[in-house]
Each structure stands twice: as structure tokens, then as C-alpha cells.
Image (cartoon, rainbow, N blue to C red; front, side, top):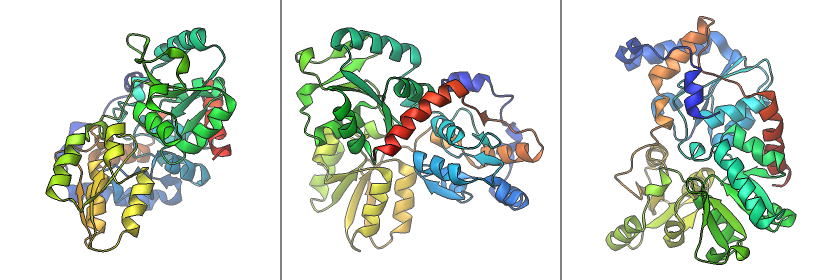
Length: 368
């Protein structure tokens, strides 16, 4: 289901009166409902969320980590997932049937996940099968819809995270000669390159024109990269790095592998959100860092490490706009809807999609 389809299913949106409440009043009400429901309510918060939301999170982490934590929580009747749509879908697939997963604002989608829909994917698979035969295994970043995960699971593939992508690609190459990687071309390219696959052996599949984009012989392709990207991480540029190096040659640059290959290659280090957080935690006091990832997280890291000089690689960067749709008013509204017995923003993945999507998730977990 695309985020547009999901929005159509919402029974009403948050009333405007919530926007007129003071922060103090909203915080008071949220805290009251959390105390009232106790263990029956669980609020996971993604690292990219605003501080006004993160303060009420029972657990913080990346998307799959939070879904797995939710899976272990058997006490909660309601899981209010402060993240984006595909994350809540994964939580719904991993939790018990009696548990209700809620997204406080159904408009909180992911532009990357929406860059690959089922119609495009089915057509691409058909054409690639015609070109390459049964030599391709599909993989998808967990930043994808449940339908795309199900497609991958049905065709023998697996999901990947930015933390375990290298291990999953190694497993995939042991299964088939070629990989089709959805929906983020940059994570796929950076991971495959780290495994020794030359850039000339990778092609980009353009789902709009339905063609492979490469200057080289199609037969030599080992990795087919979907033409998708993260709208946040793609905004970190080679010029950002050049300007920063000129101003301060001693600064260390660490970026997320959703950044372009050129940016990753020029940085000192790259890794998942968890990797970046742990790298800064280990860093010596007084060290200087520029971080190429989402701004809410960078600002939180800066606050937590006053003994280090930390900045964003792109100081003009905006936070993830879709993630930021989950704000304090929407969190309060969703909790009060639960309190009234009229929960809104319920995320429910059909059993058919869930069955195949879990195959992809479980193959990843088994091989990492």
C-alpha cells in the first residue's frame, strides 16, 4: 500500500485545535495518558524524530531495531510508532494479532519507499528476467513498503539494513549471479563497491523509462540498482566536503551510506545510524566531526557531546520533512483517540502480504 492509499483510509485528520495548545499543556496530557495506560501503551521513537516527541519514547532506535523491540513487547495493547509508514508496517507484521500499531500522522511516509511501487517492480522484474533469465535475486532495503518486501520474499530474496547490507549481499551472491537492489541505489552501490564489485558492473534501473542505465555491456552487470534515493542524504554533496576540508583540514567526516558514492568515497568513514552514534560516543574529547545524516539526530548528538566539536556536513540541511510530520500535537491526538476508544491511524498489513514479507525479513535475520 502506498502512503497515498493509506491516507485515504484515515477516518479524519487531527483537529486544528491541537495546534493551538501550548507545549506545556500537551506535554502534561501526554504524560497523563502514559501513566494511565502503563504497560498497555508502548511508544517507540525513531532517531530522526523531534526532541518534543523523543522525550516520550519508551525506546529509541532505527526502524528495524524498534520493530524488533516491539515484537518482544507482549504487554502493550497499543504501539504508537513515532516514525514513518513502512516502519509501522514492519512493527505490525512482527507483533501479535491482538496488538494495535498506530502511526500518529498517516502522512508520515518515506519518499524513498514510495519510489518503488508494485506495478513498476513487476514490470522491471519481467523485463530483467527476459534479459538475464533466472540469474537474479531481489533484495530490498527495509526502507520499503510491505508490498515490496513481500515481492522480494516471494522471489527468494531478503531485506537488508544499512548495518547488515554487506552480509546480506554476500549471502545473495552465493545464491545467484546477479542482484536487483531496491529502492535505494546509493546504499546498494556503496555496499557492492565495498565487496569489490566495480562500478562498471553496476547498472541503474529507471522505472519511469523502464530501461537499464549504463554505458557498459549489459551482460557484465552484477548489480541492478533501482533508481531511488533518500531525499535527505542525497543533499550532502562533494562541494560540502571540499568547502569543509578547505576551512578545516583536521575535521573528520562521517556519513550515512545512503549518501552518494562520491560523498562516501571522500569521507573519512561511513556507516549506519547506529554506527555513527557509536563512533561519536567512542571519539576522544576535543575531536572535530562533521556528520552527514538527518539534522534532528545531528543536533541531538551535538547536545550529548559538549566535549567535542560537532557539526552537520551541510549546515543548510533541513530535517526529514515526512518524519517530522510526527510532532507533539499529533502524538497527543493519537493518544487521546486511544483513550476515547476510537484509535486513528491504525496500520494493518494483510496476511497475504505479511506472509511473503516475513520470508524476506527472516532470511535477512537468519543470514546476518
